[in-house]
Image 1 (cartoon, rainbow, N blue to C red):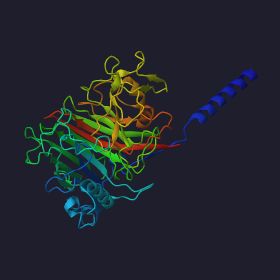
Image 2: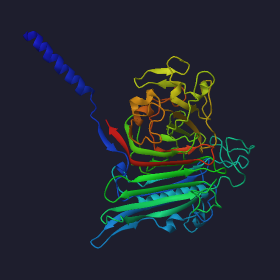
Image 3: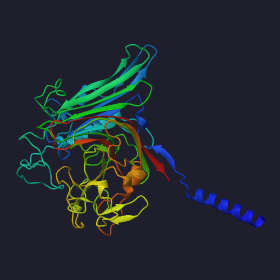
Length: 494
């Protein structure tokens, strides 16, 4: 009996040792400057881009399409007030001011990038391990004038070509920047409860330059966007309320709320950017938390992204360095609009499937394995236009909608993603089903397929852009509306 007891004690101790050895001595911390969106002292900015993530031409009397709303709440014995760090002069800075600022060598695109850095410096908050700047609201129009050759093709100069249905354009000027209007954040007292105070502000506008902004939200066939933020003073999370409305002239519009890196390039750009992420999350060691309430979906062509992550590395695994001929933007996006179908299928669209799928247990299957490959988990995969060793069949990504080549992997709710906290079936998290999500984005992003040249060292995947929102694709007179709160990115140190 003693021998048996000794064996039992040894077995129990052995199991405890295994658990201790296998456990992760990880420390979790927030990667962003405003964990959970709880700071009263808000930092938020807005940026607008054309089809290829450039400006090309400013909208009349709007200045360069970068603005910010950054303030501190100042509490004294006599009164409470907001001290705004960015004023109208800052927000209205235009390419016309470049010479007076000693920036006459900058074109309109580089000037917008400079203005973002300038606003970031006004809003900067000192923190550990580095300062941070603001939440970024991103606007983009998919209109492209194919006859003007404004956008490069996979990072190289393009040539004019006849209009195509995939690129909407009503004629000359169709790639214009939007009008952006700003209601600076102000402090409001509750009508009936004097002590209950609320902070509220907004950006709103339209791409229709001849539209009456006061009527744009409700007027037929008029584009419109707005992002309104509000918070009870000293309590809870900011709520960012988004509305995006397309028109026949502007049927392809995008609106995202982003946490971008505070230094370096962010996903999709070749300029230095500013943002909220003081730590750039890397696979597989980060999670993203937020609450999402979708009110209106934006129609069947609204590619509503529960989560969109963006990065950049070259096909040989080297980091991007601003050379748009060899840099490649990489995106992964989970679409939760239940109207979005899986275009990836083995019968006639194998080229729209990634070559491999990796299950959560590490098992990898090829797209030709009809018995095991989860085709319904993928909307579409497309390859970089500058990749040299692609497996047949393949499908190139749109060669114009980024300054450099891009690679996109769009996934759909499916049981294979449940291990990571993502929706497993259509309708989860959609209209009428508001949820607080905790997504293991880091572990999922580590398992997803992204192209690299054969024989090159696998890249360490860093994600300088983490965002959510919608892209309404070539569909006029649609409206999307949603609210985001409690956003955070949690990273682990091993």
